[in-house]
Length: 108
Length: 112
Image (cartoon, rainbow over all chains, first blue to last red; front, side, top):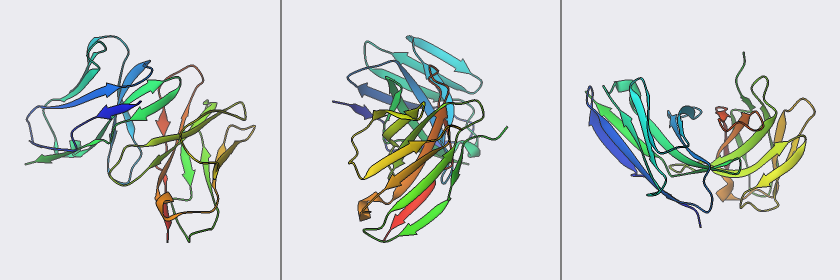
């Protein structure tokens, strides 16, 4: 079966750091994506992890452990514009299997 | 450079009707995938087109069909609409062999 789990909602304060976790159990695995989606807009690419370890890109970092079926997205120096849904997706033979998404609310 | 464009933006239909949604991929891309996103959920894979053929299909009934044209644009057709088909339909394009998908803003379909 295919199962990807993320928390439904998270709240954090402007300027803080937040970590969004994702666990997965899928029949195949080629890599893991994180997308950001603002309400009413298209998902936009944040990161792609194929190998274990941490990938850093500006304020955003993503971590992958294939043996544990686990990833997280780390957002630093939170800004109000970071309020959005964050989607974890496993890539398997050219298609993406998404989790339900985590709605992050950043408060002043 | 235009990204992925979808039309229409919004659509209202009644049960039993048929609908056609359209997608133009990002310039240079040759592969188009369609996803259905229900409110509060992550997108679900419907199918993928490459070289005008359906290459992969998700767990959707035959009421969902598609087409890819020689210019790589694509259509998604849904027949005999059900209330449960109400969702945001996302088109994503990519270059065959590359993993990164670029998404359009979607078509919001409401079935009454």
